[in-house]
Length: 445
Image (cartoon, rainbow, N blue to C red; front, top):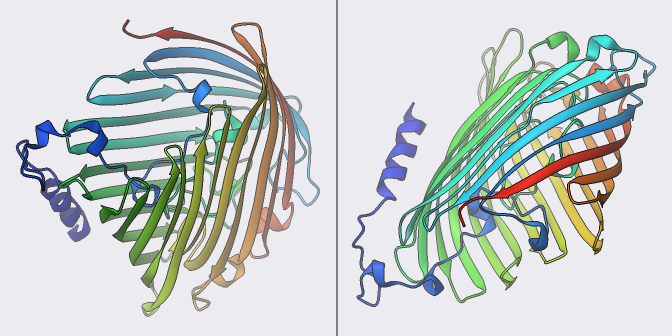
């Protein structure tokens, strides 16, 4: 409760009155867009762009449906010592609204899904995916934003756009899932709210709050994994040295809970980051951040354990007319995400798309995570040390004005000796073919 009250106070303090005065003595309302600062990736709370500029759309209503045929060589998700393969067929309708005004930019997306298996009918599923992203300029120098994403799925590979399933961030985000249950019922929800205030030509402050939740409705499908949730807040100061160079500092608090049967695991972290971002081009940035992190871990039946550890992040984002590339690395102490206790986490993610010809696109996305338990005294946590590697490559080609086709391959490998779900079948391979129908309707003029 104390952390929630502090976060609310920070949010209200960050909202100024309209008639603030700049360093040069002029009214804030007379400032031009040229004086507006960017929010560097280490503190923005948003993911890097996933599509090239030429494919980006705004002020539109988009709807469509995607048909997918795929073969998975581990359709039972580790329930048997010998992996069982099966063919799957999915229908994934979607609708998205992107609305832009002089003060707001809102994106609403809804994408249910229906998947049928050729032989293992008990795995047939219905999915739900919904997200909202709203940015609102309260005044020329104050911006508020809210993002929320909800997913209900039984197959993490079954997405309308597999390359966007793992977004790349420039900041140390609390993970929804430290490990991946490839074929299991799962509910996830993540939310982020932020307010930024540019109080001078070269200075900006901001405050944010985050929430995540991970729930496995049927624990028997995920032996060794557990529900978890997290709540936190952050505050930052950013200083623009020049048009290309930004420096600043951020304080971040996070409280993570894991819910096994019996004792409850809790991890709290306090992190102070110093960051630096250089914009080599308006759409090409490189960021570094690092600082001390204090963590405290509690199991209800054991004495508290606490210590200090370094936290580091680095990221690169580029959005060109025909190409996008984003990569990030983060080393932090965290918890939850399906695992117990507190662990040192090293995570790397990347995504890339290239429009190599007018009607041909190639894309790739991948991630690596290494989780090492730092509290071996916790019951069961010492067996959860391990790592995971995943990657997807695909080739896209439009068929006429309203249809697209895609051919792709996904591989997932996870090594955790103490988790039976992965020790029996650590590898999953999936080949897929999709045909999509879509249309766009411009909004406004």
